[in-house]
Image (tube, rainbow, N blue to C red; front, side, top):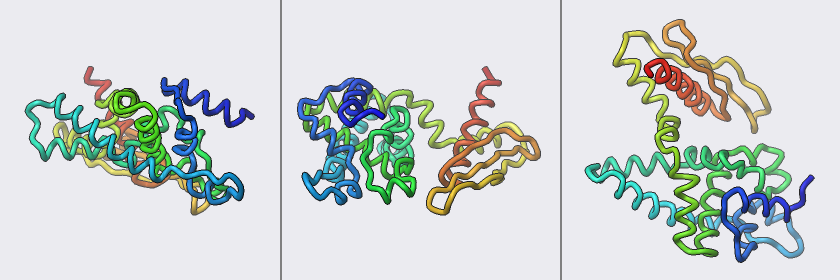
Amino acid sequence: MRNRKEALKELQEKIGYQFKDETLLKQALTHSSFANEQKINKLGNYERLEFLGDAVLELVSSEFLFNENKDMPEGQLTRLRASMVCEPALAYCARDISLGAYILLGKGEESTGGRKRDSIISDVMEAVIGAIFLDGGIDNAKKYIYRFVLSDLEDKILFMDSKTLLQEEIQKNNTAQLRYELVGETGPDHDKEFSVEAYLDEKLIGTGVGRTKKAAEQQAAYEALVRIKGKKR
């Protein structure tokens, strides 16, 4: 098993940023449950860095949307930004770089599936932004956000809004009824995984798996949308 130093080196190579003060990165990856377990050399946790990273992310994403959408009204810009930086969206981005694998968790949080929880990995995503901002300034934080949050936006927005977009797509073209069916449920209560199938009348059009029924439905809708868009090309 790799040691902590190797893991931090690997993550920095992955994100393309080398910390001058590596303790900031360590703090950004430390959950309060782990910090509270340390009796000696107690580490700080990521919560203050997350607070800062959230503000930096809002500023950078606002500037990006303002510049990219010259004629979009304020209300629409606000809704679009909210969909891009909400908890599930940031968790989606964090999973792209396997950020959950680098988090330090307490034994209890680890055993209850904290490493896979959207709320934790999205918070760490923001904490890393805060850490980069403190270590390297706004330009380096912006590079990270552009690369890992604001990239492939069309695909990410499609994923986040897939249930709504699928419903709209179906209503445009036919009168068939869209429904989601829960077909599987595994794991203990604190760490369940749900399997869902999406049907158009009786035709299976997508499948999804998630930590919640809503997440599984979103995944099933996304798969269905990708298939529909593929057929149209």
